[in-house]
Length: 270
Image (cartoon, rainbow, N blue to C red):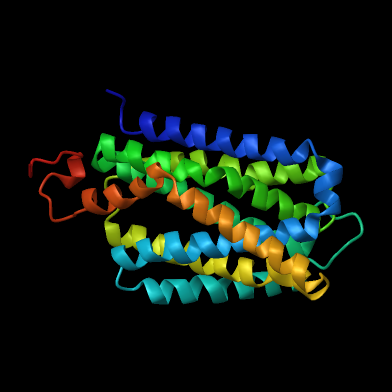
C-alpha cells in the first residue's frame, strides 16, 4: 500500500500531465489560437462560470456554513488584487506577462493548488475515496490548461510564453499543493476544505465575469454568445461524464471529523 503522500502525489502528477496535454493541443495551433484568442477567452469564461456555479460552489456550501463569506472574500479579493497589480506593476512594452493577465493566471494557479490539497485530504481519509475524487478532478484539469493558455494569448503573450506560464499556473501547482499540504493532511477538516473551495469559487467568478468577459464589448453579439455557450456546453458535458459523479462526493463523507479514526485514515463504521 502506498504511503499517504505517494498516492496523492502520483495522481497530482497525472493531473499535471493531463493539463499539459491540453496545453500541447492548443499550443501546436499557435496561429489559430492567437487569431481567435478573444473567442477562446469567452469560451473559457463560460467554462469557468459553469464549473464554479455547478461544481465548486455546491461543494463549498455542503462542507462549510461560512461558504458565502469566503466566496465574497474571494470575489472582492480578486478585484483588489487586479487593481493592486495594475497600480504596482504598470504595463511595460517588454513585460513577459501583461498586468491584465496576472490576476486570472493567479486565480487558476490558486484553484489548481487547492486541487492538490484536496488530493492529500481525500487520500488521508480513505484510499478508495481518494482515487474516485482524483479521477473526477483530473477530468477538469484538461480545460484548466486551455483556459490559462487562452487568457495569456488574448493578452498578447507569445505562443511559447503562454505555454510556459500556463503550465506553471495550471499544471505544476497541483502536485505542489500535494507536497505543501502533505505534512498537514490529517489535520484538515471538511469545514476548512469547504472554505478553500468557496474562496477559489469567488476568485474564479471574478476572473470569469471580469477579465475573461471583456472581449464581449468588441465581439459581434452572435459570435460572442456562441463562444460563451460553447464553453458552457463543454463544462456541462465534462460534469455529466460518469466518473464526474464521484468528484468530491466521497470526500464529503470521508471527511467526517466525528469518526474516531479519521485522523488515522481508517473507517470502522461499517
